[in-house]
Image (cartoon, rainbow over all chains, first blue to last red; front, side, top):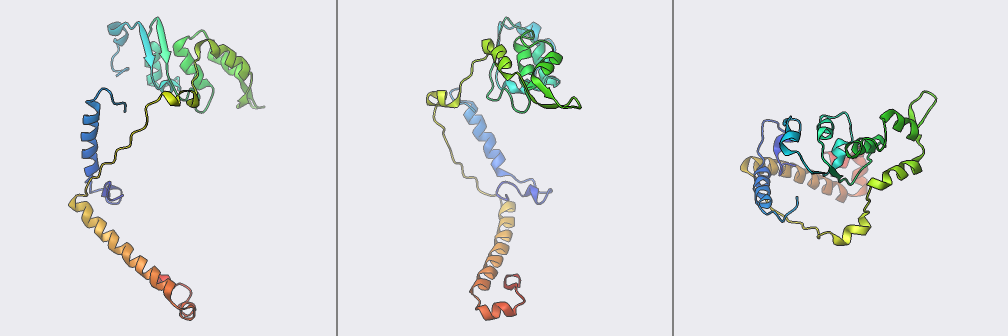
Length: 37
Length: 174
């Protein structure tokens, strides 16, 4: 849970590195018209 | 997009509409359903894996987009296919063979076992994302506490039977 974000335990902490990574992955994947999401 | 663009029909004047994930319009009062049903085209296809999720009138809403005349007015659909209890509330369904017959001309059903051989294989990709310092500090804190609890639990298990019973029956809560 903490590895996703500590937000659920502490709403003052919005750190979430996976979200940034997901954004990159989606942008990369969507650039390939052959890939279905 | 649909309800933000009032003149979508005018701008697109579509020859064919293909509505994917058509269960989005199953609730015929929703804004999306209203907006979709305002669109007109000579040909239309709706695609869905779940034409009926909870109630049979969901398929009524989807069919209304394809051909409003096919199932007639909603009150008649309800009267024909809903079984009502003494208080007039839906208690079950009836005449489902007739519903099936009415849907047959417009419905093409593909079961999973018929098509799964034609589908591309599933691809799983694993990405590892490191924690930021803020997370790592908190993680270490919890890890320490869990390690303490685990160590206490282990000690409790290895105590001899006599001393276990003398510690008021809860050796792991020390």
